[in-house]
Image 1 (cartoon, rainbow, N blue to C red):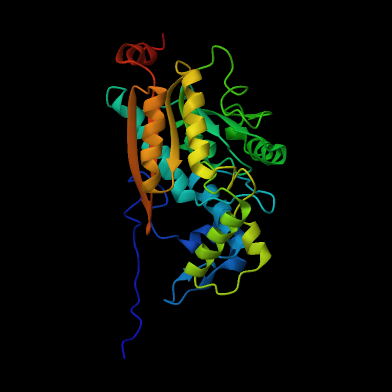
Image 2 (tube, helix red, strand yellow):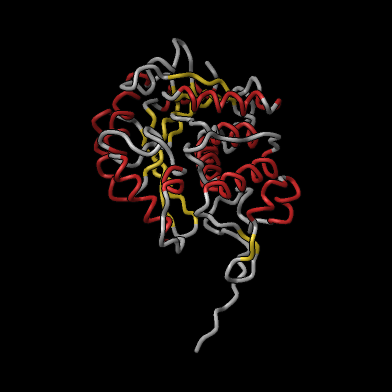
Length: 319
């Protein structure tokens, strides 16, 4: 009979090299910076300190500790039921976009407040703007259709002095629009990012949550665990991810000269052909597909631009 082997992971090697979350979580340090985390930390099956990743309160508190430890926040919280995203994956998206912009900036990652980014569907957690601001000094506009989510995001920004003036939050009042009503006349963005709603219905989203929890060896799933995964428009919309991204691509064409790089996460490889078809129809000039990995999960970012080479050079000269 084989005994269970004790395995110590020292690094999450699939994450971006600049990701501050590559190492194993140092729970001693995280508890020191966020004492609320202490009540959730327990030895796992291998005797290592960990948390129950199926517990929404534990995951939210871990996020808070990571944001305090790695990104200098003094306050972070979200209302019950709103999406509580994994910090490492969100950071990877930002770092990969920084690398993409470096390719078009004489080999230098563009930093500082002159780099402006739009986070489509920023949510109550405002994670992407936090990481982009703290890692690279970029300024952000975060858009959302949900006013309570924006109120939560505003509270996070206001209670962290180093975020003030760097993250502007705007409500999208028309659910059919993604960029119109958010991007103002003569406003320019170096980058747009988006974590689209993956599912086509609440039932589909809940099925995905149940599957995820069972992968964490949770046979029984209660309603609180279903709720912590996200709300309507965070996890599901009519037509799901494919329809949302197609609409985003179509509408991005109307703002072709307002943004250098549009981008979005794509959850599954098989959805790429539909995305590429929509980009051809929209007449995108350049398209980049960037693979990302986190543990056993693989996803990718698709980025596109409508700017010609001459227009790109003019943009970089800030003309």
